[in-house]
Image (cartoon, rainbow, N blue to C red):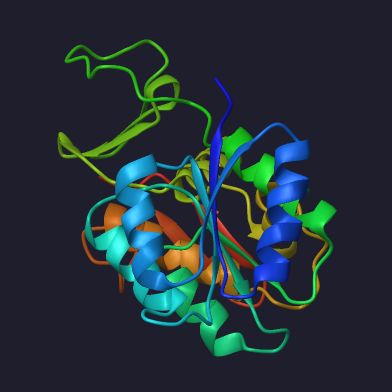
Length: 236
């Protein structure tokens, strides 16, 4: 079954262009031209990914993103922002957007980004199993189940976005090593580093909020000043 993408933008020319290119790539595409219509579509067509413009009538993209996440819906969200609007980019990421692109953009680039995001989030959670699987990763009170896309803290299932889950696995695979923001952008987001490392910092902050007992004094994901981050096993 083809994956479903919801495109939300108030500019009909952009919607038409993205719809055409995404359909050519094999996706089923639904569209909305304002924030209220977008939320209705989310609840009726249940998209696999949302391409969401920030500047929308009725409800802007930031409010739409906030509303989706407040319903505990973890559908991947790719936000479209003005070229130099750092505030919107950062706020969108802090509210749970998975990625962003700045206007103007190439439709092919959007399709490539959509493919990359959906490829990473294509693992579908299986019914929860009580027993510990041989492939589970245990770090202190954290249990990661890569095959089921699940993370537990003290036995409680955490709600991580696909991007947060991927970033966590990336850090675990390099446990004890200092990883620069540039390397994380290149490996997890497939970007060439262009000076905008805030996307990494925001996602690290989200992970700390969910994984650490005290996010302000993290014991799991440590900051290495001037270099980047590293994941360490908490000391007993």
